[in-house]
Image (cartoon, rainbow, N blue to C red; front, side):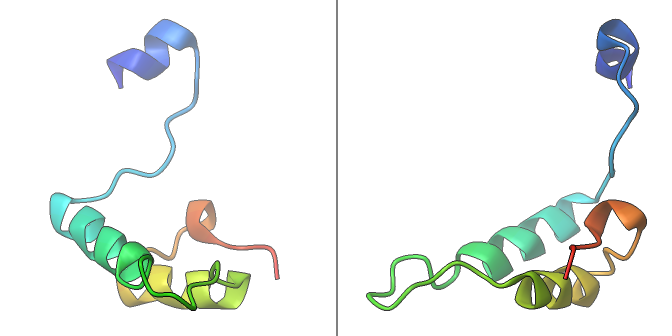
Length: 62
């Protein structure tokens, strides 16, 4: 929060280390697959929700 005060920014989402690891695994697990494609907003929303990330910060425009 010190950084936010220093740069006069509102804090965004704060997540646990476990959520961070889960998000990284969900987001990058298939990144090296030959048929990889970017996640759709709906797929991203599902990944966020599965980790308990449901605040407005994590809402995707669909």
